[in-house]
Amino acid sequence: MPRDLAAGMHDLSFATTEFVLPHTVLAEHNGTDIAKYHVGIGQRSMSVAAADEDIVTLGAAAAAPVIARHGADRIRTVVFATESSVDQAKSAGVYVHSLLGLPTATRVVELKQACYAATAGLQFALGLVHRDPAQQVLVIASDISKYEADSPGEATQGAAAVAMLIGSDPALMRVEEPSGLFTADVMDFWRPNYRDAALVDGQESVTAYLQAVAGTWKDYTERGGHPLEEFAAFCYHQPFTKMARKAHRHLLNTCGYDTDEERITRAVGQTTAYNEVVGNSYTASVYLALAALLDQADDLGGRSVGFLSYGSGSVAEFFAGTVVPGYREHLRTGAHREAVDRRRPLDHAAYRALHARSFPADGGDHPTPEQTTGPFRLAALRGHKRVYERR
Ligand code: COA
Image 1 (cartoon, rainbow, N blue to C red):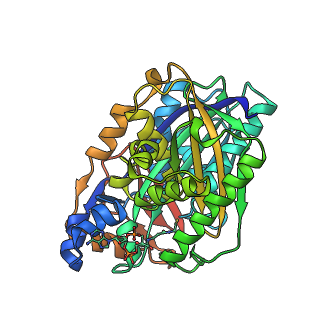
Image 2: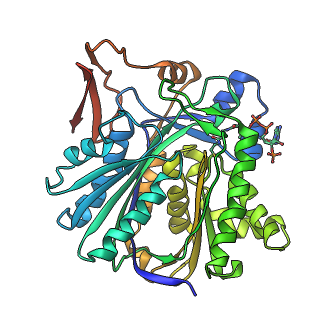
């Protein structure tokens, strides 16, 4: 029998970038049939970070409303999950801790395993809450995905941050035991320390992802998880939203069910609305799927939702959450829609200029142009130090 941990997600908030590139603009530039983007991979636009935005400013923007609503008195741990880290040593979470004015009596750490790390953060958080139910953990997943210009991966770029407040007696979703786990040493997507843009073998990443779906589900069922039909919906990691459909088709196949499109739409159709306009936000993606589901679905109170968190390389986890009755009063639907709608569209040349940007590594004083209208900005790189401002 699955075991309700009586702990889980108390709040969920996401932020995205100042700019957006519609796929119509990319298609016009590279001569691609727009149906390949809209239908073939299921993407309509991608969030593009301004010159003065990064994973820190996005993470702080996602977390600020959570702190404003709940205060920081019970938060003793901040976990920052990212693939697009800004420093090899210092956790991006420490900058966020400072920007949000969190208490000094806090532990802060950064976690990495491609797109999976936020789920590791969630599980670590649940362990800490289990040890001391008075404590809350702020888990932030923040990423700016970057692939080579004119590569197949370019159309699957994106950026967003999710902040999740994890605690006992949660308002949104209780997380259950067991989890189904799967790790395999594959080279489907990776980014050596000397590279800005990820390397990806697209077809291999689809194959590796599907193997992880079957692997996690096998472990999940062997450990006494719910049968498939008990789930109201499934939130998958979405490097592109069509992947959620491929993944669910594979899961249905693995379980011996029919794989008709209507059945797949019922399971994942309400989880893709944010990811299809934001693009791949790596660690944040699976939780953006949850935000879309909660913001759009009819009342899910008391229902089970399945999560498949996949990080290339690869590590994956399947787990279940039970949506808490009354959760709708605690959603941030208006703010989420505003975060998406407020983005300013870029033309192709402006997007390319931002894509090509990087800071000189000479230790000089390099102020950034003031572009973002968000609450936090990266003002400069000065003497190798990142300088942030709060508005
Ligand atoms: N109309 C409708 N669909 C079309 C189309 C058109 N004109 N042209 C192509 N398509 C479909 C293809 O049939 C295919 O669908 P399918 O996979 O269901 O068969 C889909 O569009 C993609 O086409 P493909 O030729 O495979 O595209 P690609 O070589 O450009 O690669 C990705 C697509 C997603 C693999 C590539 O963008 C990528 O590698 N992205 C990064 C993925 C990643 O980050 N993975 C790691 C994390 S999980």
